[in-house]
Amino acid sequence: MNDEQRYKQGLEVRTEVLGEKHVNRSLENLNDFNQDFQNFISRFAWGEVWSRPGLPRHTRSLVTIAVLLALGREDELRMHLRACFNNGVTKDELKELILHCSLYAGLPASNAAMHMAEEVFKDLGIAPEKVNKD
Image 1 (tube, helix red, strand yellow):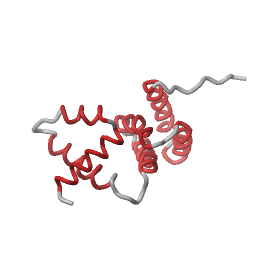
Image 2 (cartoon, helix red, strand yellow):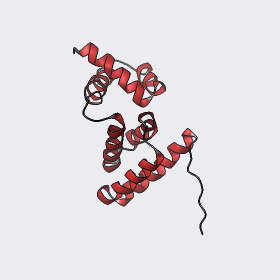
Image 3 (cartoon, helix red, strand yellow):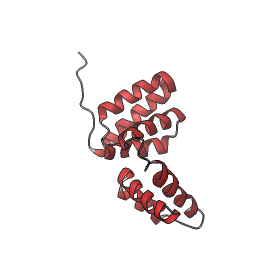
Image 4 (cartoon, one colour):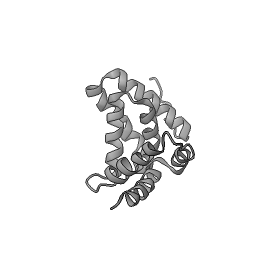
């Protein structure tokens, strides 16, 4: 596969995972400073790594969220929390992932991710249900 084909494949995968709105916004904001970087992201991250057959996208989403949580990369984490539903990740899986990460990435990082996930849920209209305090 040549670079142009890899870019095209990457753009397709990137759009399927992150959504057309996000990708279109990135493309609309291309300029002579960021164009090479955006091309690299589409070719390498999405056209090469996310396109590999070794892991399903569902698993890739969970791994990506765990790593971003551990590294404290909030902007990317928010983006992937929003996008993971395109790959079949459920709210319950996210809850368990964040809880599990608290053991290895720390409570503050997981607490921040939990709040961020709740904000994303609210934005997507899938806010968690209230529970009784009893």
